[in-house]
Every structure is written in C-alpha cells, then in structure tokens.
Image (cartoon, rainbow, N blue to C red; front, side, top):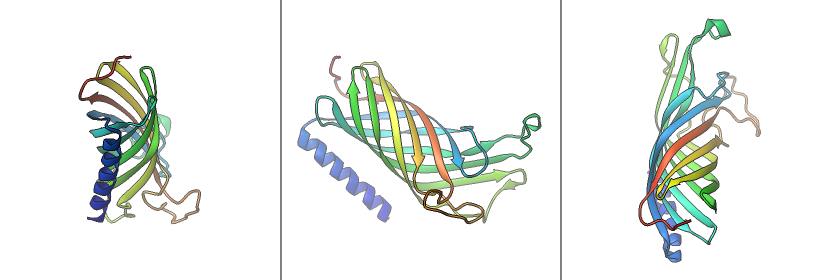
Length: 206
C-alpha cells in the first residue's frame, strides 16, 4: 500500500508541475523488452518480454521536457540448452514489474534524448531450470530502483519509436553465495527495450 501511495504522490507532484507550465501531453507506448540478470552466470539479452503503458509529458522550455510513465515491463534471464556451445543447462526467469520512470528529455529536431531514474514494484515472478519450477529459493526484493538512458525518433506526427537501456542500481536479490559489497550488492536487471509511442493531441510542426 505504501508503494502505491508513493507512486500517487509522485504522479500528483509531476502533474501539478506540468500544469503550472500550462503545457502537457499524454500518450501510450508498447513494445518489446530484452533482458539479462547480471550475476546469475547466464549472459546475453535472451529473455524477451512485454513493455508498455502510458506517459505524461510536460514542456519545461523550448528544448527540454520532463516525462512521467507508468508501465508494465517483463524482465529476467534465459538460457536454452546448446551442447555445441557448451551450454548444457536450461534456465528461465521472468520478473513482472509495475515501473515508474521519471525522465528528463532534450529535443533536437526529430530526436529526443532522455535520462532519469525508475522505481519498480515486483508483481509476479517465475523461475525454472532443467528440473521444473524453482520454489523456495532466494527471494527477490519487491522493489527495484534503476537508471534509464534512451533515445526516441519521431516517425510521423504523433507516432514515434523509443530505444531505452535500463540498469538496476540496487540488487533485485542476493547472490547465491550471499556475498555483498557496496559495488556488487547482488544480482541486478539489465534491460534493452524497444517500443512504439503515440502521443495524443496536436503536435507542433518541425
């Protein structure tokens, strides 16, 4: 409940700031996430999932804006068996988050560059290996904090595409060994996301 209250407070603060500027737009986004979990020994962005939700954008100046999103995103890790490459074990992990990125954006013609933090809440998890579903293993933390870096391109009027890299800066769960240091506290999510975006309302001409 406290997580939902925090999200609501952030949303109200963001929208209030936008209204003070008298310029805001809303939109939808949907696409694909590809991910891995650093620290689980399975490297590569092989886990595909859904990434989508809504956003509110407020103009701060001629070149700058701020964007608040509420998205549903699937993260995790995957490895298929491939004996020819020395991969003998199957592994699958899916972590479903409700995530709230808060982004600052710089606009340059049809391109938009963005960066900012994200705050996620874990709503569902599934983990499997060669023997079936893994239960009773090390628990995942319910909250996630991450940093986002991305670029968007306006395809036509209100339609655009977005590429984004997201990296947890707090652990999503402890290492199997239990070891933890300030620079390596545990396993973390790495995500590359590709989405299409649609912004409602009239768009200014270039």
